[in-house]
Length: 143
Image 1 (tube, rainbow, N blue to C red):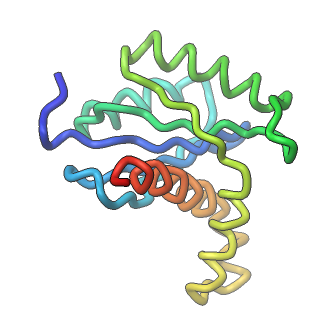
Image 2 (spheres, rainbow, N blue to C red; image 1 turned 90 degrees about the vertical axis):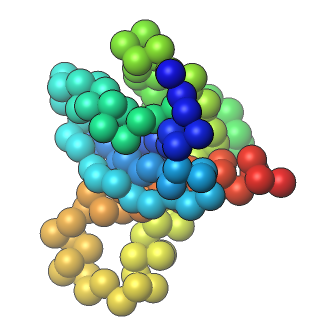
């Protein structure tokens, strides 16, 4: 069902929040889309985004440890990926997400966001981390 204008969805999975990003239809630029709460309805919300944005492929952050090995959190993400794949039928690519949250935090600080604003909108970090993850994937696809 994909077409030339379909998009990719980037997901930064967290136990409390899930950051989402989408590519442009040409699959060149990723941008933060939104953050959702990680509840039993999270996959339903992601399915709605997939339909609304005509998503072809999902890029999901894989939280490996500093040695590049599976962590407890990575097992949780793999379980989430299985459920998401069964419910959506979409291709899911697991991508190393080490340091994306740190990079997102630095990007938000460099934009001049005040500390109080950052504390009041912690979901923004998850959204930006999802965009960084997806942009990294898009960049590797163009090479």
